[in-house]
Each structure stands twice: as structure tokens, then as C-alpha cells.
Image 1 (cartoon, helix red, strand yellow):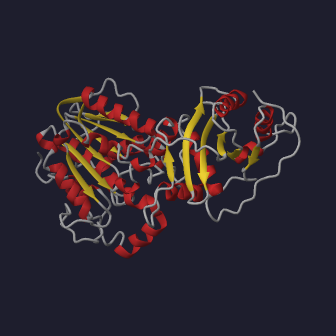
Image 2 (cartoon, one colour):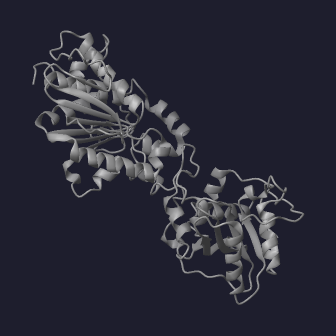
Image 3 (tube, rainbow, N blue to C red):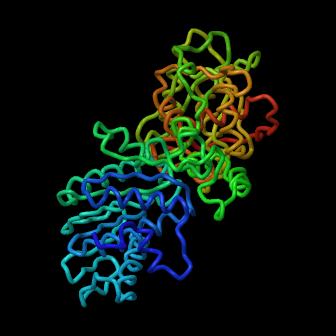
Length: 475
């Protein structure tokens, strides 16, 4: 290795603007890279929060250092988006072009930001995570913040794509002795870090978790508990204000503790005590909760609410691909006729069903009441005129699943309600903490329950809309 360029941050002090000095955590990361990557087969994961200057160290300083010392080798860099990767790649290329005293030189045709070469035969390729990388081998693969937003980090579908891309790239694009350095803040227990550390070969990874405020006496940087990564960037007082502002996002993103979100699900109070083979109680009304949907189909959840102790029980669910309203209600009528008593049916669910159809001025809830009335079923409508606050209703569901005050369980679910159980386990939050809606198979069953629990919870005051008139049944 060339003398004087033993670590990325040391070379950066020469090529960055005059007066720049590495922060403590940047030096820590730089030395770990410098002492492992030159030997080959390095596998490094760094987790630390946003806006600490981590990406510039990894995406600019590290490639400059690596290619200055190994101009015959290749760097591949992947970031959340292709434009961002190109931006970093252009910065690295321009660093060599603007500092003629550097030993590594660019080929004359190296004009592009995303792919360019050195006169010694090495070079750099920059891609968005998930994009094609064929035709380029990597001696150093850099992966920086693979999730563009919180929404993608919480999406199981997006995370699976990242997993497949990372695994496939490492297997197919790395040259012999090639190294991998990945850096990002945590998003989910099953994000890229969680995935790699759960694999059978996890021991090959050196993992460094660097929370914004130290949490352990064994902090990798030797910090005292509560000490910031860099006091000159953000003091402990400033980070405390950030913690209050970020609320639930603080622990995963800044403290590298996605487990604070439970299993990553928004209904994080759900647990095994909520599962029990409950059945409908004879002699009591039956609640029918509906989420109106064409794709993937109607969702109906059947249960009961016992006002004496505010106990919610959910025993059946009705759903089918592209199942329309009439078909779903007919399925419920068959279930109702099979009961040993003839209960009244209380309708709860999506207030959007109050909206009049543009063709005839009638609504889905009116259609439901007509269909049930034709079957001889007495109906009481418990549907609000407008939707309740999403965050409020999510909080009430969590409190019903398990009280944060006394641990009381007020929700019992028959395991046959598989879609509802899956929802409560897997639905995650978007940037605002609301149920994330990108997966069409999720959220519908839990929305049925969310509307019902919110409406019947103590203190709820939103009055149902009074319905009059007839309805045309939409099919």
C-alpha cells in the first residue's frame, strides 16, 4: 500500500477542503476498513443514524483511497437510487481529475459518472440497489443506505428484493478475495443487516452498531452511556430534542434498535395470548365488520363485543379473490343461518361505504342492509359518518390487544381467522406511523377490526350516520 494513504480518512484530509477533519466515528469506521479490506474477503456492516456524514466517508473517501492504492482493481458502489449512486461516482472521478498529484489517473474516455476506468485497468461502477450489474466484477463492493425511505424499509416485498439483490450480487459479481462494506441506519428487524446476520454464515460479518447516543458500557467506540457520536455535530441535548420529535422512528433509525418496534409490525401488542379457539356466544348479537374492496376482494370479519368487560372476540372471516359485495354478504347469510339462534347483526367497518354511488346516489352500506333484510336479519348500523383518526385507532387496537397499564387482554381471535392474524403480525407503518398500504393482501382484515374496536371502545363519541332510502346492490 502506498505510504501515507493507510486509511480513507487520512487521504480525505488531503483532498477535502482545507480545514476538514474527520469526526471520531468517521475515523473509527475508516480504520476498520483500512485494517480489513487490504487483506481481502472483508465483510463489514456499520449501522449508524442519518446525517452523521457516514455516506461521504464510505462513498467518496473510501473509493478514492482504495483506487489510489490499488488502481488495477475495481470498485462497485450501490445506493438506494441510481441518480444518487451516479452523484457519488462523479465525486470520486472528479477527485482524481482535480488532484493531479494523486498517482491514479483516469483514462481519457472516462467521462461518465456511473462507469469509468483508470489507466492502470481498474475502475468504478455505480448502480442503484436492485439494478443490473452484469459485465463488471468487484474487488470492493460498497452498499450504502439501500432503502430510500422508511416506507420501503417497512415493505416486506421491497426488503425481499434487497435481500435477493445483495445475495445475488455478492455471489456473482465479487472477484476472488473481494470485500463488501455495507452501511445504513436500521429500518426493520429484517432489513439488510438483520437478514445477513440471520444467515448460517453470519459469523463472517464484522458488525458495528453505533447508536447516536451510546447505550452500553461495551460501546465499540468506548463511549460512556448517553454520550453522542460527535458532540460538535449534535450534542446530547440536541439529540434529545430530535428523539422527542421523531417519536417511534428514533429507536430504529438513530439508536439502531429496530426491536423497539416489536417485530416491526404496527400492531406490536399482538401476541399469542390473543389467539384462542373462541366461538360466537349464543344469545348475543353478532358483529359484522366490513372493509369494502374489489382488489383483492371484499373482507368481512365476524365477531362479538361484550360491553361488560369490553371484550372483543373474532371467530370467522370471509374473503375471496375478487369477491364482490353481494357474494360476500351471501356467504355471511349462510353462516348466520347455521347458528343455533337468530341474532341481530351489528354492522361496523369502513365509513367510506357511506359514500353514495355516482350512478344512483346509494351506498354500499345501504346495499348491505338490503341484502341482510331480505334474509330476515335485523340490523343495527354502527358505522361512523367519517373515519376516525388512524393513529388513534391503531393505538386503541394495541391497547385492546394488551393494555400497557395492567397487561389486560381484551381481544381473542380464533386461529381460523388467518388473514386477520397475518395482518396483526405483519402490517407495518409508513413514515407517519399509519398502516402501510403497498401490499394488497394486507391491512384489509385488520382495518375491519380497527374500525370496530375504535367505535366500541369506551369514550368514543362519533355518532353513526343515519341511513335512509333504498339501495342498488353493487356486484
